[in-house]
Length: 124
Image (tube, rainbow, N blue to C red; front, side, top):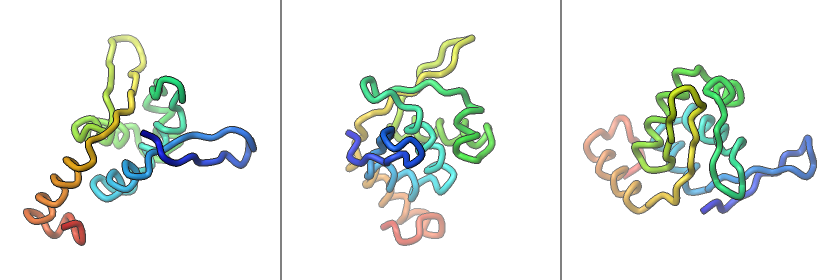
């Protein structure tokens, strides 16, 4: 699923992966804050399992957004099918990255652009 690797220049060897198509769609559908949250989740992703379990405050800190923004974005990404959130009381949420059906998301985006042209400029 993950098509690109971003090199962590401070460590020299370490990297994290992000799906280019997911980045594009999340940025266009949900905005800059959502893209930062997605990048924050990718930063903590375990490469072998494609899951992560950072706290909301850890995601908010790395994305430079509020915890409320993280919660809102995570819910939207879950609704759109980019991630699955496994919630257990008393434990941190576990975020699992999905192989998104991009054709469905793009189709949905075109429909929304026709219905709400001011919110989805240039997306149709």
